[in-house]
Amino acid sequence: MVYSEDEGGVAVSRGDGDATKQRSILSRVSELYDIDGDGELNAAERALREMDTSNRGFITNERAYKLMTEHMDMQREMFKMKRVIASLICFTIILALSNLGTSFASAILAKDTTVSNRALTNRKGETLATNTDADTFTAATYYSGNEASRERVRRLCGDADGDGDFDGDFMERADGSTVWMNYYACEDEIYDGTLYLSREDGIALVERCRIERRVQIKRVWDHAPIHTMIQICPHDQGTYTAPGAEHPEVTWGGNDGARIGPALNTNGAIYSIWGNRFTSDLGQPCDEDTDCDTRQNLSCIENTCSARMSDS
Image (cartoon, rainbow, N blue to C red; front, side, top):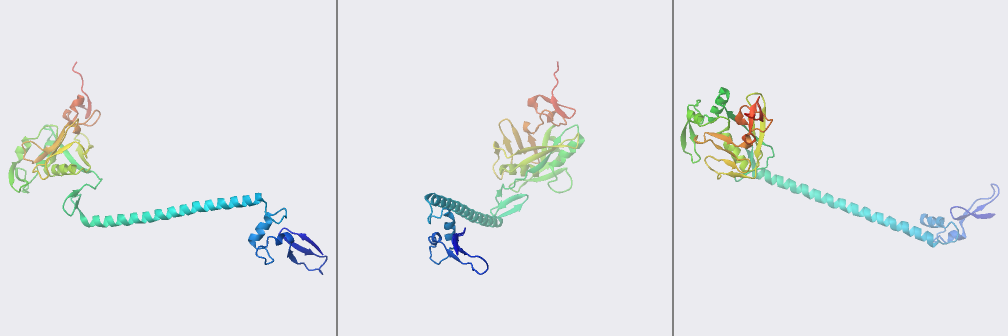
């Protein structure tokens, strides 16, 4: 019978023919790796035995160093993974708390606010500027030589008393009293090239600018089915009348030099829009010369603001 070391670290008996039965036993070297002494090599013991390729019965320092290095690298990777998992858990908790807080705040806000006349108000009746959509007001320009524009502006004076005509109307003041506004008197106080708003739109525009909403004016042109959008609010240089004023208005200083308020001598029956900020620049549409910015020495040529021709 002959014994030899196999790759598994055991001594195998080998015989000739079928008469000899094969039997496996641990070799002397493998016995050194049988730590628990059960006569067999488990997975860990076999791994150590397989590292001893020189059959010395012990692992060299180089092998031990390599094994420890691999073990420490694995520990570092496991530590990094634990940190990642802990960070993900913290992020999930924070996200859940944020969603809970947002839901709670939304529920409270829904109870404390209502929407009225396109404005969000709280339970005290105060208007909150939370809508980012622009409020648009259409303005009409008065030209004495254009009957369509004259009629359009006349009707902005409004049928305040609801009697179906525009011969004269009672305008209600802030204190509840009324004042008679003659229709023709209103027309007498409007001027060529001036933009006008109805009293209702004028007051609404000023109040929306006061609470810093996005407000724009839609200017419709008579020469073609086009319009120009002019954004006027929010604006950081506006000066407003006191809240609750009978005829609220706003003025802007600086280069704008603009005003939106009740037309002079009309008792607030119609609102006017005045200032270079509402005129057209070079190359923009116009109906009359007064539509063009006077500071740029422009005139309306073929319904486009163009450089004024020199007299020479």
